[in-house]
Length: 469
Image (cartoon, rainbow, N blue to C red; front, side, top):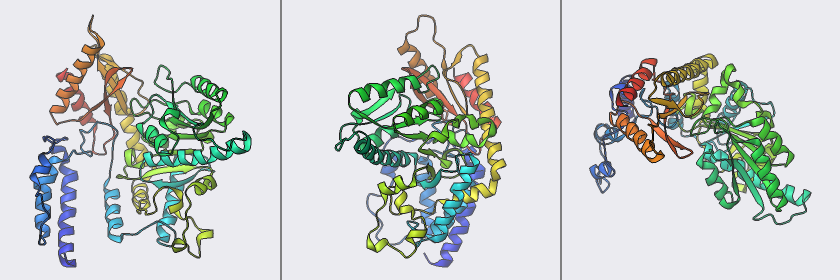
Protein backbone atom coordinates (compact mmCIF):
# COMPACT_ATOMS: atom_id res chain seq x y z
CA UNK A 1 0.00 0.00 0.00
CA UNK A 2 1.64 3.22 -1.14
CA UNK A 3 0.93 6.64 0.33
CA UNK A 4 -1.69 7.58 -2.26
CA UNK A 5 -3.63 4.36 -1.67
CA UNK A 6 -3.22 4.85 2.09
CA UNK A 7 -4.66 8.37 1.80
CA UNK A 8 -7.63 7.21 -0.28
CA UNK A 9 -8.34 4.21 1.91
CA UNK A 10 -7.92 6.27 5.07
CA UNK A 11 -10.55 8.78 3.95
CA UNK A 12 -12.91 5.93 3.09
CA UNK A 13 -12.23 4.32 6.46
CA UNK A 14 -12.99 7.50 8.40
CA UNK A 15 -16.23 7.84 6.45
CA UNK A 16 -17.07 4.24 7.38
CA UNK A 17 -16.25 4.93 11.04
CA UNK A 18 -18.51 7.98 11.11
CA UNK A 19 -21.33 6.04 9.46
CA UNK A 20 -20.87 3.22 11.96
CA UNK A 21 -21.13 5.57 14.93
CA UNK A 22 -24.24 7.15 13.42
CA UNK A 23 -25.94 3.90 12.44
CA UNK A 24 -24.79 1.32 15.03
CA UNK A 25 -28.24 1.48 16.61
CA UNK A 26 -29.67 -0.20 13.50
CA UNK A 27 -27.44 -3.25 13.94
CA UNK A 28 -28.23 -6.18 16.23
CA UNK A 29 -26.25 -5.64 19.42
CA UNK A 30 -25.07 -9.28 19.43
CA UNK A 31 -24.32 -11.48 16.41
CA UNK A 32 -26.38 -14.45 15.28
CA UNK A 33 -23.51 -16.93 15.09
CA UNK A 34 -22.48 -20.24 16.60
CA UNK A 35 -19.00 -21.27 17.76
CA UNK A 36 -16.80 -21.93 14.73
CA UNK A 37 -18.96 -20.07 12.20
CA UNK A 38 -16.49 -17.22 11.66
CA UNK A 39 -13.45 -19.48 11.57
CA UNK A 40 -15.04 -21.73 8.95
CA UNK A 41 -15.76 -18.70 6.76
CA UNK A 42 -12.09 -17.66 6.69
CA UNK A 43 -9.45 -19.18 4.39
CA UNK A 44 -7.38 -21.85 6.10
CA UNK A 45 -4.14 -20.65 4.47
CA UNK A 46 -2.66 -17.16 4.06
CA UNK A 47 -2.83 -15.44 0.66
CA UNK A 48 0.28 -15.89 -1.46
CA UNK A 49 -0.06 -12.55 -3.23
CA UNK A 50 -1.02 -9.09 -2.02
CA UNK A 51 -4.68 -8.16 -1.95
CA UNK A 52 -5.96 -4.63 -2.60
CA UNK A 53 -7.27 -2.43 0.21
CA UNK A 54 -10.75 -2.63 -1.28
CA UNK A 55 -10.68 -6.40 -0.70
CA UNK A 56 -9.63 -5.90 2.92
CA UNK A 57 -12.60 -3.65 3.65
CA UNK A 58 -14.95 -5.93 1.73
CA UNK A 59 -13.82 -8.94 3.75
CA UNK A 60 -14.13 -6.99 6.98
CA UNK A 61 -17.72 -6.05 6.20
CA UNK A 62 -18.63 -9.51 4.90
CA UNK A 63 -16.80 -11.82 7.32
CA UNK A 64 -15.91 -9.94 10.51
CA UNK A 65 -18.54 -7.31 11.21
CA UNK A 66 -21.47 -9.78 11.25
CA UNK A 67 -19.70 -11.70 13.99
CA UNK A 68 -19.06 -8.76 16.31
CA UNK A 69 -20.77 -7.77 19.54
CA UNK A 70 -21.25 -4.00 19.44
CA UNK A 71 -20.13 -2.64 22.82
CA UNK A 72 -20.93 0.91 21.72
CA UNK A 73 -24.51 0.01 20.78
CA UNK A 74 -27.08 2.06 22.72
CA UNK A 75 -28.76 -1.23 23.69
CA UNK A 76 -25.61 -2.65 25.28
CA UNK A 77 -26.34 -3.02 29.00
CA UNK A 78 -24.16 -6.06 29.77
CA UNK A 79 -21.09 -6.41 31.99
CA UNK A 80 -19.74 -2.85 32.38
CA UNK A 81 -19.53 -0.24 29.63
CA UNK A 82 -16.61 0.16 27.28
CA UNK A 83 -17.54 3.65 26.24
CA UNK A 84 -15.23 4.75 23.47
CA UNK A 85 -15.75 8.22 22.03
CA UNK A 86 -14.84 9.94 18.75
CA UNK A 87 -11.94 11.98 20.24
CA UNK A 88 -10.45 8.84 21.72
CA UNK A 89 -10.76 6.98 18.42
CA UNK A 90 -9.05 9.77 16.51
CA UNK A 91 -6.25 9.91 19.06
CA UNK A 92 -5.75 6.17 18.64
CA UNK A 93 -5.30 6.74 14.93
CA UNK A 94 -2.55 9.27 15.67
CA UNK A 95 -0.95 6.88 18.14
CA UNK A 96 -0.94 4.09 15.57
CA UNK A 97 0.47 6.38 12.91
CA UNK A 98 3.37 7.63 15.03
CA UNK A 99 4.03 4.11 16.30
CA UNK A 100 6.05 5.32 19.27
CA UNK A 101 7.61 2.96 21.78
CA UNK A 102 7.07 4.76 25.09
CA UNK A 103 9.10 2.65 27.49
CA UNK A 104 11.29 5.52 28.71
CA UNK A 105 11.57 9.29 28.59
CA UNK A 106 14.38 9.09 26.02
CA UNK A 107 12.34 6.98 23.60
CA UNK A 108 9.40 9.43 23.61
CA UNK A 109 9.80 12.50 25.84
CA UNK A 110 6.40 14.00 25.01
CA UNK A 111 4.63 10.72 25.71
CA UNK A 112 6.18 10.43 29.17
CA UNK A 113 5.51 14.01 30.18
CA UNK A 114 1.97 14.03 28.77
CA UNK A 115 1.26 10.89 30.81
CA UNK A 116 2.52 12.65 33.94
CA UNK A 117 0.29 15.66 33.27
CA UNK A 118 -2.89 13.74 32.35
CA UNK A 119 -2.52 11.38 35.31
CA UNK A 120 -2.27 14.37 37.61
CA UNK A 121 -5.37 15.81 35.94
CA UNK A 122 -7.17 12.59 36.83
CA UNK A 123 -5.88 12.80 40.39
CA UNK A 124 -7.33 16.29 40.67
CA UNK A 125 -10.62 15.28 39.04
CA UNK A 126 -11.10 12.51 41.62
CA UNK A 127 -9.65 14.65 44.43
CA UNK A 128 -7.12 11.99 45.32
CA UNK A 129 -4.39 12.89 47.85
CA UNK A 130 -1.44 14.97 46.65
CA UNK A 131 0.97 12.16 47.53
CA UNK A 132 -0.53 9.82 44.91
CA UNK A 133 1.48 9.51 41.70
CA UNK A 134 -0.15 8.03 38.61
CA UNK A 135 0.95 5.76 35.79
CA UNK A 136 -1.10 4.20 32.99
CA UNK A 137 -1.36 0.41 32.99
CA UNK A 138 -3.19 -1.60 30.36
CA UNK A 139 -5.92 -3.07 32.60
CA UNK A 140 -6.94 -3.28 36.25
CA UNK A 141 -5.88 -6.92 36.25
CA UNK A 142 -2.32 -5.78 35.57
CA UNK A 143 -2.59 -2.96 38.12
CA UNK A 144 -3.77 -5.35 40.83
CA UNK A 145 -0.88 -7.70 40.04
CA UNK A 146 1.52 -4.75 40.24
CA UNK A 147 0.05 -3.80 43.64
CA UNK A 148 0.33 -7.32 45.04
CA UNK A 149 3.88 -7.79 43.77
CA UNK A 150 4.89 -4.51 45.40
CA UNK A 151 3.05 -5.53 48.58
CA UNK A 152 4.90 -8.85 48.64
CA UNK A 153 8.29 -7.16 48.41
CA UNK A 154 7.43 -4.66 51.12
CA UNK A 155 5.95 -7.33 53.42
CA UNK A 156 9.09 -9.42 53.02
CA UNK A 157 11.15 -6.49 54.26
CA UNK A 158 8.77 -5.79 57.13
CA UNK A 159 8.75 -9.44 58.18
CA UNK A 160 12.54 -9.43 58.42
CA UNK A 161 12.90 -6.09 60.20
CA UNK A 162 9.88 -6.24 62.52
CA UNK A 163 9.27 -9.93 63.13
CA UNK A 164 12.77 -11.28 62.54
CA UNK A 165 11.46 -13.63 59.85
CA UNK A 166 14.05 -14.26 57.16
CA UNK A 167 11.92 -16.73 55.20
CA UNK A 168 8.29 -15.71 54.74
CA UNK A 169 7.48 -18.20 51.99
CA UNK A 170 4.07 -19.62 52.89
CA UNK A 171 3.41 -16.96 55.54
CA UNK A 172 2.20 -13.92 53.57
CA UNK A 173 -1.58 -13.54 53.38
CA UNK A 174 -3.86 -11.42 51.14
CA UNK A 175 -7.39 -10.40 52.18
CA UNK A 176 -10.34 -9.40 50.00
CA UNK A 177 -14.11 -9.75 49.95
CA UNK A 178 -16.18 -12.61 48.60
CA UNK A 179 -17.44 -10.22 45.91
CA UNK A 180 -13.95 -9.33 44.66
CA UNK A 181 -13.06 -9.38 40.98
CA UNK A 182 -11.51 -12.60 39.70
CA UNK A 183 -8.31 -10.70 38.85
CA UNK A 184 -7.46 -10.68 42.57
CA UNK A 185 -7.38 -14.48 42.64
CA UNK A 186 -5.25 -14.54 39.51
CA UNK A 187 -2.84 -11.92 40.88
CA UNK A 188 -2.44 -13.85 44.15
CA UNK A 189 -1.36 -16.91 42.15
CA UNK A 190 0.90 -15.03 39.75
CA UNK A 191 2.55 -13.00 42.53
CA UNK A 192 3.57 -16.19 44.29
CA UNK A 193 1.47 -15.98 47.43
CA UNK A 194 -0.45 -19.15 46.59
CA UNK A 195 -4.24 -19.24 46.32
CA UNK A 196 -4.47 -20.99 49.71
CA UNK A 197 -3.22 -17.73 51.27
CA UNK A 198 -6.11 -15.66 49.88
CA UNK A 199 -8.70 -14.98 52.59
CA UNK A 200 -12.24 -14.18 51.44
CA UNK A 201 -13.88 -11.86 53.96
CA UNK A 202 -17.60 -12.03 54.72
CA UNK A 203 -20.08 -9.44 53.44
CA UNK A 204 -22.75 -7.25 54.94
CA UNK A 205 -26.33 -7.06 53.71
CA UNK A 206 -25.28 -4.77 50.84
CA UNK A 207 -22.59 -7.19 49.58
CA UNK A 208 -19.74 -5.01 50.90
CA UNK A 209 -16.81 -6.25 52.98
CA UNK A 210 -17.38 -6.35 56.75
CA UNK A 211 -14.45 -4.60 58.50
CA UNK A 212 -14.97 -6.58 61.72
CA UNK A 213 -14.69 -9.81 59.74
CA UNK A 214 -11.46 -8.56 58.20
CA UNK A 215 -10.02 -7.69 61.61
CA UNK A 216 -10.98 -11.11 62.96
CA UNK A 217 -9.40 -12.92 60.00
CA UNK A 218 -6.16 -10.99 60.43
CA UNK A 219 -6.05 -11.67 64.18
CA UNK A 220 -6.53 -15.38 63.57
CA UNK A 221 -3.72 -15.47 61.00
CA UNK A 222 -1.31 -13.48 63.14
CA UNK A 223 -1.90 -15.82 66.07
CA UNK A 224 -1.06 -18.73 63.75
CA UNK A 225 2.22 -17.13 62.65
CA UNK A 226 1.10 -15.67 59.33
CA UNK A 227 1.88 -12.14 58.09
CA UNK A 228 -0.88 -9.92 56.61
CA UNK A 229 0.70 -8.61 53.41
CA UNK A 230 -2.12 -6.92 51.51
CA UNK A 231 -5.80 -6.03 51.58
CA UNK A 232 -7.75 -5.46 48.37
CA UNK A 233 -10.96 -3.49 48.80
CA UNK A 234 -13.45 -2.80 46.03
CA UNK A 235 -15.26 0.39 45.20
CA UNK A 236 -18.02 -0.82 42.90
CA UNK A 237 -17.92 -4.62 42.81
CA UNK A 238 -18.53 -6.33 39.49
CA UNK A 239 -21.61 -8.17 40.69
CA UNK A 240 -23.56 -5.30 42.26
CA UNK A 241 -21.32 -2.18 42.48
CA UNK A 242 -21.16 -2.62 46.25
CA UNK A 243 -18.93 -0.06 47.97
CA UNK A 244 -16.53 -1.51 50.54
CA UNK A 245 -16.06 0.76 53.62
CA UNK A 246 -12.63 2.07 52.68
CA UNK A 247 -11.89 4.09 55.79
CA UNK A 248 -12.47 1.25 58.23
CA UNK A 249 -10.60 -1.21 56.02
CA UNK A 250 -7.72 1.21 55.60
CA UNK A 251 -7.36 1.75 59.33
CA UNK A 252 -7.24 -2.02 59.93
CA UNK A 253 -4.68 -2.44 57.16
CA UNK A 254 -2.43 0.25 58.65
CA UNK A 255 -2.47 -1.36 62.08
CA UNK A 256 -0.92 -4.46 60.56
CA UNK A 257 1.36 -2.78 57.96
CA UNK A 258 -0.62 -4.45 55.18
CA UNK A 259 -0.55 -2.86 51.73
CA UNK A 260 -4.02 -1.38 51.08
CA UNK A 261 -5.07 -1.52 47.43
CA UNK A 262 -8.39 -0.15 46.15
CA UNK A 263 -9.95 -1.60 43.02
CA UNK A 264 -12.33 1.04 41.63
CA UNK A 265 -12.12 -0.19 38.04
CA UNK A 266 -15.65 0.75 37.03
CA UNK A 267 -16.90 2.99 39.81
CA UNK A 268 -13.88 5.29 40.12
CA UNK A 269 -15.10 7.47 37.26
CA UNK A 270 -18.24 8.30 39.25
CA UNK A 271 -16.12 10.01 41.92
CA UNK A 272 -15.64 12.85 39.42
CA UNK A 273 -19.16 13.85 40.48
CA UNK A 274 -19.15 15.83 43.75
CA UNK A 275 -22.29 14.01 44.90
CA UNK A 276 -20.63 10.61 44.34
CA UNK A 277 -17.24 11.42 45.88
CA UNK A 278 -18.37 9.60 49.06
CA UNK A 279 -17.56 6.29 47.36
CA UNK A 280 -13.86 7.12 47.91
CA UNK A 281 -14.15 8.15 51.54
CA UNK A 282 -10.93 6.89 53.15
CA UNK A 283 -8.94 6.67 49.91
CA UNK A 284 -6.16 8.69 51.58
CA UNK A 285 -5.37 5.57 53.65
CA UNK A 286 -4.65 3.51 50.53
CA UNK A 287 -1.21 2.56 49.27
CA UNK A 288 -2.49 2.13 45.71
CA UNK A 289 -5.66 2.80 43.74
CA UNK A 290 -6.85 1.88 40.25
CA UNK A 291 -9.73 2.85 38.01
CA UNK A 292 -10.36 2.42 34.29
CA UNK A 293 -11.05 5.45 32.09
CA UNK A 294 -11.65 2.81 29.39
CA UNK A 295 -14.85 1.72 31.13
CA UNK A 296 -16.98 4.76 31.86
CA UNK A 297 -14.91 7.81 30.96
CA UNK A 298 -15.18 7.74 27.16
CA UNK A 299 -11.63 6.46 26.58
CA UNK A 300 -11.43 3.39 24.38
CA UNK A 301 -9.76 0.21 25.60
CA UNK A 302 -7.13 -0.03 26.98
CA UNK A 303 -6.30 2.65 29.56
CA UNK A 304 -6.09 1.87 33.28
CA UNK A 305 -5.11 4.61 35.75
CA UNK A 306 -2.96 3.27 38.60
CA UNK A 307 -1.97 5.53 41.48
CA UNK A 308 0.62 4.70 44.12
CA UNK A 309 1.96 6.50 47.18
CA UNK A 310 5.32 4.80 47.68
CA UNK A 311 6.93 5.18 44.26
CA UNK A 312 10.24 3.94 45.66
CA UNK A 313 8.62 0.65 46.69
CA UNK A 314 7.18 0.33 43.18
CA UNK A 315 10.56 0.98 41.58
CA UNK A 316 12.36 -1.44 43.89
CA UNK A 317 9.96 -4.11 42.69
CA UNK A 318 10.03 -3.44 38.96
CA UNK A 319 13.10 -1.43 38.04
CA UNK A 320 15.50 -3.14 35.65
CA UNK A 321 18.13 -1.09 33.84
CA UNK A 322 20.51 -3.07 31.65
CA UNK A 323 23.20 -1.06 29.94
CA UNK A 324 21.36 -0.93 26.62
CA UNK A 325 18.42 0.90 28.26
CA UNK A 326 20.41 3.48 30.23
CA UNK A 327 20.42 7.11 29.15
CA UNK A 328 22.00 10.36 30.30
CA UNK A 329 18.72 11.64 31.78
CA UNK A 330 17.65 8.61 33.85
CA UNK A 331 18.29 10.34 37.19
CA UNK A 332 15.99 13.26 36.40
CA UNK A 333 13.07 11.69 34.52
CA UNK A 334 10.43 9.01 34.91
CA UNK A 335 11.06 5.88 32.88
CA UNK A 336 7.68 4.21 32.96
CA UNK A 337 9.13 0.86 31.90
CA UNK A 338 10.11 0.59 35.59
CA UNK A 339 6.60 1.30 36.87
CA UNK A 340 5.00 -2.01 35.93
CA UNK A 341 5.39 -5.36 34.23
CA UNK A 342 5.75 -4.37 30.59
CA UNK A 343 8.91 -3.05 29.01
CA UNK A 344 7.19 -1.90 25.82
CA UNK A 345 4.44 0.69 26.28
CA UNK A 346 1.87 2.25 23.98
CA UNK A 347 1.18 5.99 23.90
CA UNK A 348 -2.08 5.69 25.85
CA UNK A 349 -1.91 9.16 27.37
CA UNK A 350 -2.75 10.83 24.06
CA UNK A 351 -6.32 9.51 23.89
CA UNK A 352 -6.86 10.28 27.57
CA UNK A 353 -5.67 13.85 26.96
CA UNK A 354 -7.93 14.26 23.93
CA UNK A 355 -10.99 13.01 25.79
CA UNK A 356 -10.50 15.30 28.79
CA UNK A 357 -9.85 18.30 26.51
CA UNK A 358 -12.75 17.47 24.17
CA UNK A 359 -15.42 17.02 26.85
CA UNK A 360 -14.03 18.99 29.77
CA UNK A 361 -14.65 17.91 33.33
CA UNK A 362 -18.19 19.29 33.23
CA UNK A 363 -19.02 17.39 30.05
CA UNK A 364 -17.81 14.10 31.51
CA UNK A 365 -19.71 14.80 34.72
CA UNK A 366 -22.93 15.44 32.79
CA UNK A 367 -22.74 12.07 31.02
CA UNK A 368 -21.97 10.09 34.19
CA UNK A 369 -24.70 11.91 36.14
CA UNK A 370 -27.22 11.15 33.40
CA UNK A 371 -26.41 7.43 33.47
CA UNK A 372 -26.82 7.34 37.26
CA UNK A 373 -30.15 9.17 37.02
CA UNK A 374 -31.45 6.71 34.42
CA UNK A 375 -30.45 3.77 36.63
CA UNK A 376 -32.55 5.28 39.41
CA UNK A 377 -35.48 5.48 37.00
CA UNK A 378 -35.10 1.78 36.16
CA UNK A 379 -34.89 0.95 39.87
CA UNK A 380 -38.12 2.89 40.36
CA UNK A 381 -39.88 0.95 37.59
CA UNK A 382 -38.79 -2.30 39.21
CA UNK A 383 -40.09 -1.25 42.62
CA UNK A 384 -43.45 -0.34 41.08
CA UNK A 385 -43.82 -3.69 39.25
CA UNK A 386 -44.91 -6.45 41.62
CA UNK A 387 -43.44 -9.11 39.31
CA UNK A 388 -39.87 -7.93 39.97
CA UNK A 389 -37.59 -7.18 42.90
CA UNK A 390 -34.30 -5.32 43.29
CA UNK A 391 -31.47 -7.57 44.44
CA UNK A 392 -28.99 -4.92 45.58
CA UNK A 393 -28.72 -1.17 46.21
CA UNK A 394 -28.20 1.08 43.16
CA UNK A 395 -25.47 3.55 44.12
CA UNK A 396 -24.29 4.13 40.54
CA UNK A 397 -25.57 3.02 37.11
CA UNK A 398 -25.96 -0.74 37.56
CA UNK A 399 -29.36 -2.23 38.42
CA UNK A 400 -29.55 -5.81 39.73
CA UNK A 401 -32.99 -7.42 39.72
CA UNK A 402 -34.95 -10.61 39.21
CA UNK A 403 -38.48 -11.96 38.90
CA UNK A 404 -39.97 -12.48 42.33
CA UNK A 405 -40.33 -16.05 43.61
CA UNK A 406 -43.77 -17.57 43.30
CA UNK A 407 -45.40 -19.10 46.32
CA UNK A 408 -43.80 -22.45 47.10
CA UNK A 409 -41.18 -22.06 44.34
CA UNK A 410 -37.74 -23.38 45.24
CA UNK A 411 -34.44 -21.65 44.44
CA UNK A 412 -33.67 -23.83 41.43
CA UNK A 413 -37.00 -23.04 39.84
CA UNK A 414 -36.82 -19.29 40.40
CA UNK A 415 -33.26 -19.27 39.05
CA UNK A 416 -34.32 -21.15 35.94
CA UNK A 417 -37.22 -18.75 35.35
CA UNK A 418 -34.93 -15.72 35.55
CA UNK A 419 -32.39 -17.39 33.29
CA UNK A 420 -35.16 -17.98 30.76
CA UNK A 421 -36.22 -14.33 30.99
CA UNK A 422 -32.69 -13.11 30.28
CA UNK A 423 -32.35 -15.58 27.41
CA UNK A 424 -35.57 -14.31 25.83
CA UNK A 425 -34.58 -10.66 26.20
CA UNK A 426 -31.12 -11.16 24.74
CA UNK A 427 -32.44 -13.38 21.93
CA UNK A 428 -34.13 -10.31 20.43
CA UNK A 429 -30.64 -8.86 19.83
CA UNK A 430 -32.16 -5.43 20.43
CA UNK A 431 -30.49 -5.22 23.84
CA UNK A 432 -27.84 -7.16 25.71
CA UNK A 433 -27.88 -7.71 29.48
CA UNK A 434 -25.75 -10.01 31.65
CA UNK A 435 -26.19 -11.80 34.97
CA UNK A 436 -24.51 -12.71 38.23
CA UNK A 437 -25.25 -14.94 41.22
CA UNK A 438 -25.87 -13.41 44.65
CA UNK A 439 -25.84 -16.00 47.42
CA UNK A 440 -26.82 -18.56 44.80
CA UNK A 441 -29.67 -16.43 43.41
CA UNK A 442 -29.64 -15.86 39.65
CA UNK A 443 -29.63 -12.08 39.20
CA UNK A 444 -30.04 -10.01 36.02
CA UNK A 445 -27.70 -7.04 35.63
CA UNK A 446 -28.49 -3.90 33.62
CA UNK A 447 -25.46 -1.61 33.37
CA UNK A 448 -26.16 1.78 31.79
CA UNK A 449 -23.05 3.43 30.36
CA UNK A 450 -22.72 3.27 26.58
CA UNK A 451 -21.90 6.67 25.08
CA UNK A 452 -24.70 6.39 22.51
CA UNK A 453 -27.41 5.36 24.99
CA UNK A 454 -30.27 7.82 25.45
CA UNK A 455 -33.23 7.72 27.82
CA UNK A 456 -35.41 6.31 25.06
CA UNK A 457 -33.11 3.29 24.78
CA UNK A 458 -33.39 2.68 28.51
CA UNK A 459 -37.18 2.93 28.27
CA UNK A 460 -37.24 0.56 25.29
CA UNK A 461 -35.07 -1.92 27.17
CA UNK A 462 -37.39 -1.89 30.18
CA UNK A 463 -40.42 -2.29 27.90
CA UNK A 464 -38.78 -5.34 26.34
CA UNK A 465 -37.93 -6.82 29.74
CA UNK A 466 -41.45 -6.20 30.99
CA UNK A 467 -43.16 -7.72 27.97
CA UNK A 468 -40.82 -10.72 27.99
CA UNK A 469 -41.68 -11.34 31.62
